[in-house]
Image (cartoon, rainbow, N blue to C red):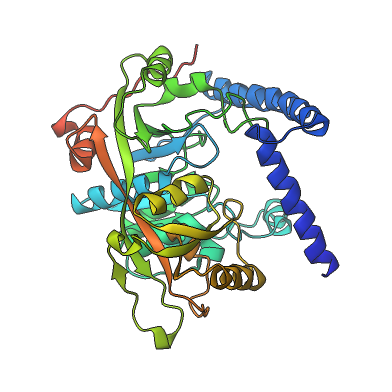
Length: 410
């Protein structure tokens, strides 16, 4: 094993250990000491988050309206709420109503210009290049590596919707309006992005694990304190099973009295065959019943692999091998070779991954077994008749005034 590979393995092991400490799975003196250190850092993180919000509330720092409908979709926690399908569903519904929609994303783990270039732009007063356009609504211009997993997946699934990646969402939004005539901007993962003023803040809360252990990063998974729920215009409870959780409802109403709560579930739709080579032909869809009684191998690099694996078991699959990578992990050829080899050894008939992971696999990659990804979509369970009705209520005044509560956090 090379030095770089050995170092990378050590880094991955440390990250896994940190995750185990956060979720209380690690035991021993070392884990306890490390948890205390992370807890001290989380107090600093929380203080910084609250200070940032206060600066905007006191108008010391200023947000910027862009003169169009801005819908913010985000969460209080780091990953795992199932945000991308909600963004996709909203964008599609707004597009179908005749809106010119652009999705603005920071492009998490995408390849941005190196830091030295940014410093050069600043020192030389040179105008920075325009935002990176993933799609103009007609053509794809970037790969998942250069755009980021979610922006690429959204662009691929949403013809007629512009997708732009830039950490500066004000610049990206201005570009979308001027270049493409967009009248509706959706900020993907934008709840903590305050420079661009949103008319609607849609906050997603994972009903299966709403706020983690209650700590902010890095001791927990919260990006900001739970009391910042009060900034939400609407709360979407994702991954719901349809059963009431009065304790969670009480917490939401405590910090945001009267806020509309819409419960939704991520429903598997079908399995799509990954076209690994020209010889394999076009991608083929299989019904979920295809899983029943089959021995499968499952691998993924998402924040909540347990939910993905549960979907597969719920539809009758027997998981004979599984591999969990870190969220947004970019697979190497060696990683995939190992997964494919172990899948064959375990007697798997097919290999299944998530749609988000599938975009990180080279389209020309060969696989000894049929390789599929699981397609998920959002279904409204409570709080609105269906998703179209929710979009109408939230985004179109003629269908009912959208609620936009005060943003002062007490």
